[in-house]
Image (cartoon, rainbow, N blue to C red):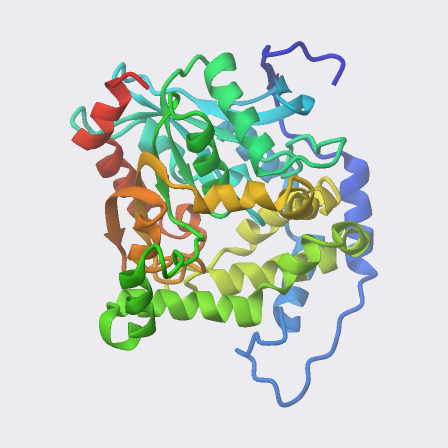
Length: 414
């Protein structure tokens, strides 16, 4: 960190050492696999990642996957930088980010923030269509894609407590002080939704509009919103089909899928000994999330895509990404996470609703904590919208951020 000057970006090229690549191959060749129980079907993922899927991917990772070619493609596609930021209430932290400016003079600065187990690579399919739209009538954007510290090439925090609020401070300083974007808009899913919403709460003069494809919030207290509670009680009769499906998705997630969150938010380092040392362990841990959270009936990741996403967490030994859950949910304080999705946000927001998203509640829950001004429902897509259906997300971003509501917000004094 000492070689960096504050707020002075340094060009960066992704590079994983030969030593780690060689070690990874050896570990893959020495791996042991569990056995499937004979009465569990081939398409039954209820016990976790399927052995045959992980075995196939592991064999390809060892003998066919060309990381060096993928690394070169990433470096060619992304203009990457690192910069040291002085973060309020924390101190120095180096941030990794990609920045693609549009040639269009009317382009809007857009911050795209990913989640776990993703990385900055989630923006890979949307950067070009957003920065270089097909015609002058279509809104263009300057795209900034930071890595959450500890994700991919993002330097892991050296001290505890670096959660959502501190990330929000850091990303805002990146946009305003480093890149000179005094007013900008944001897009976030998963952690990115919480981070960008926190940015808008902390810096409404800078964050002028938000877009989310993931929005975890609870119903408001019955005494504040009795009609909302009444709708929930009578949901089989009063909710739309989409709202009922979303409610079922959230209930299924809470019942069957949030075990990872509880472990990562309490004992991430213990988990890191396994996932940070075993490429098979990390592969199995992440593959299950890709399968369960994506709309696999419409989109399935290629083997190369899966392994490249896994490499983004393998390169730092997995633990920094796991640890972010504890830093956000526990170390930064419960109040920080409550603020993120209980305090009302007057900044205008837009929502894209993909049917396999794990956390997008009924719309009256959202309106109780956010100034929702745009909503679009889609008939395909899941948690990784920018990966699964980039064309739909791109169109939503163009339509929402070119609206008169956002244009007014961008020009009004904050």
